[in-house]
Length: 119
Image 1 (tube, helix red, strand yellow):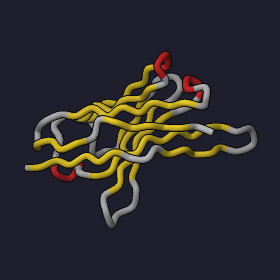
Image 2 (cartoon, one colour):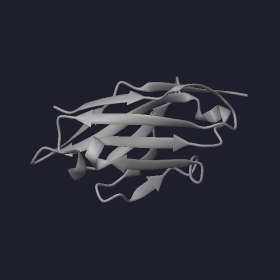
Image 3 (cartoon, one colour):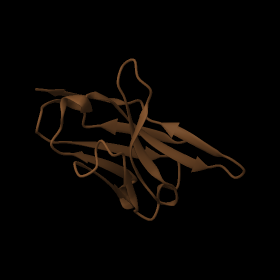
Image 4 (cartoon, helix red, strand yellow):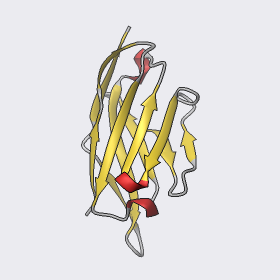
């Protein structure tokens, strides 16, 4: 079983920055991809950014050039640095870990952390 614990959410003014942290336990962290998703009430959960086990990052168009995903394998931690935040970034942010369990991949989710951007 993989546990993911997010932190770092909060209330921030538009244009400012915030960094989310997700710490994983129960798996070989360095061997699998990690990601961040977000969900606005009433809307489907959407991918924000992913980072491969090798460190290759991929971003949704809405956050490209503003957000940076990174990982520290020694600390089993993935980060999401969010700059120039906008009202539309307000959402619950979830840490995600797709873990290979042999014949199938199971996706583990954190409990989510609220980010609220005020203008």
